[in-house]
Length: 76
Image (cartoon, rainbow, N blue to C red; front, top):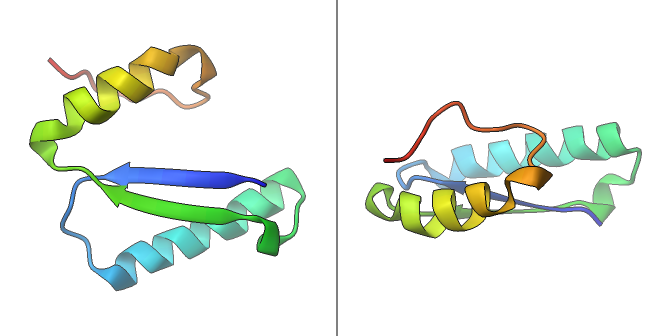
């Protein structure tokens, strides 16, 4: 506990994704008051053309009540 899944467009290097995952894990452990060893982070790349169907509609907006930070964009 906890597990964080980050979804983003492809194109970032493995080093950048690792640095992001490390920073997120540290901040989550600090914010939630848990051991860093209890935190897991995954990064899944989703092509831009699939974002609306695979992420925005089916995950973000479908579970909008659970969002603590809402996106500042709309997918049309």
